[in-house]
Length: 473
Image (cartoon, rainbow, N blue to C red; front, side):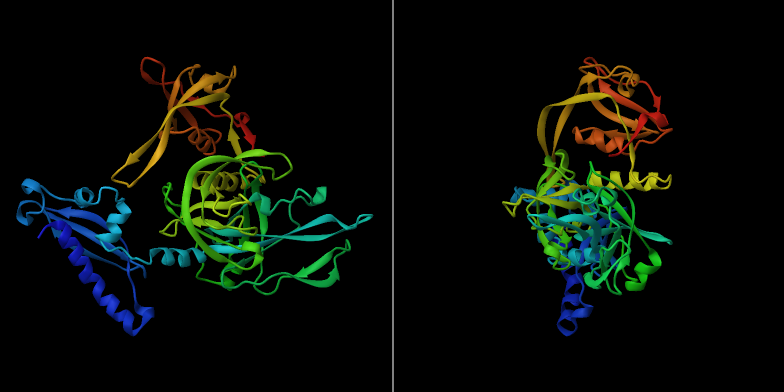
């Protein structure tokens, strides 16, 4: 019996006892989330199975001459099995292979969606605004905006939530209240909504009661140009509502066609889940959050989101965070947008770092260069089952005395990578430059590797100065 059949048979045997239990008690049922090769001992490969309840088990496959699994007595690993599977299923992805042959949990997306709910919240922000009573009269009072958020980190003192900047910023508010005067959040399953009390504060503006489930948040920092904000709540208060909540796990990757599960507060009707796929992994859209149009790097999805979904998490089929939803087409519900994973991660970590210095925003360096993307092409990886667009980044213009000039680059060079403190950051698209810049801080030593028309070289090392950094708008 070959390895492909034996893996399928072994896993079927492993699954059957749990399926039978499900007939008696659904709470005890479990299924497979993932199967990974963990080690090899001689001719034996050892695989680990992770189940939906968090438990694991292992099984062994004998390879090579004694098992007669590989060609000419060679060892046969999981990638070999996938390649054999492609012979009869040439258009299959790696995910198809796992689902159909290795019998991965068919309800994985529902498991992931429910896991994501432990990291989800809805958010209300209060502003003071002028509004029209009639064509001849205006008044000033409290206005409430709603949105969504995800738990970024749970620490001993504070729990941090990610949301959109436009959820905590109101361009129409009074100048002194562009940022909210009050922020309240509700965890999934412990939701309520603000109720107007009929009373007013010392300024004569309406007061609202948020109820016992509300978590009072504090603005940590944010960026209008990235549409990301960070909020904190005392961890003791969060755990008093639900001690089972968890922070999100950042995914390692995202790609076209991948499952995209959104959790948000559409139309302020309560936290809910929708599902679709990633339609375009990276593009730019125009938003005018403060009345000025800016280009925002975005991921296009066909997952349904609505007003109130802004700031909510976008998750893959493993329940890992791949983005923060922030915009919709408005005329086509199959065209919506999320801030992609690298931007979310880079901006939040940047804001968090500079918040410790008392700033309400992050910082980044300016290289003093413009680049042109050339020879762009889509490269498909059959082993992974997905591909990425890659391009050459040609240096166009360089500002005199800039960091890029000090790194040794000239117009016409092709940028390949940056290195920061010994860590290499490969550059496959122009987006990657911006992602890298968010990670650079004062004191970091950076170099650039580039093709100068003759050979690929590494330029001069440069130590970043505090004066090289500018505050994120």
